[in-house]
Length: 267
Image (tube, rainbow, N blue to C red; front, side):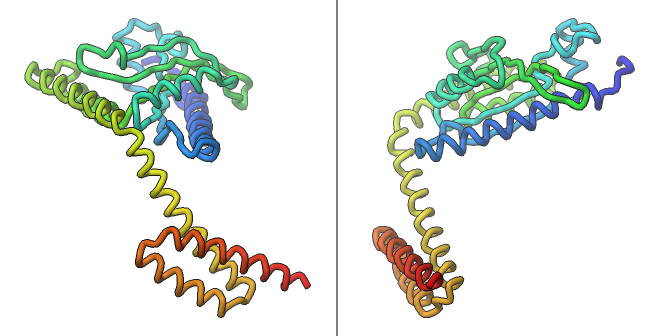
């Protein structure tokens, strides 16, 4: 091991991971607001462990003074999607960004590995502003479905245990599991509309419940205690019956009541 200060060496990568996580999470929120659906399910990130960096450098014959260019995944971002089609949408969105530059892509979905591994990788240059100045670091963005990620996580653990020399029976079982995961993704895609409709309906129902309860609290704020109590009783009745059409109307009635309360408060 060389005598470098690893905390200083890894700091720009840690900064890159944190910034990219925030940016992709923000992109998810914005897409959900604009389109009522976001192809991103959730985002995670990590900086590679020192031991893993050194092991990979040894395996790839990367000199110690070329780690920042020879190891492309010291900074790693993982974006999870519900459907395979979402992966390609997210990749398109990343390509169009101006705050990073694409180095190259690896499509392990169309051309999956012999092990069964499936994922979409994008290697990018990402600029960070450190205390010592401007630095561009390499980062790997992996885009997967939830099924792909489950399989890859298990495979990674097994490879770690067996030092990437998996017994033949374990390797065969993993391949079968990878095929099953791919089949699951195919089946989920075939009922995509039904899944999204159900998710949208659930979210709309959750939103109207929150809107009604927040509105009732607003009425208490304006000292409309009697009205608030009456609306609370109506809410309890309609929620018990799962009458979401009635809850939508109740929400409108509450907003009207709040409008009147505001005017009365101003006069």
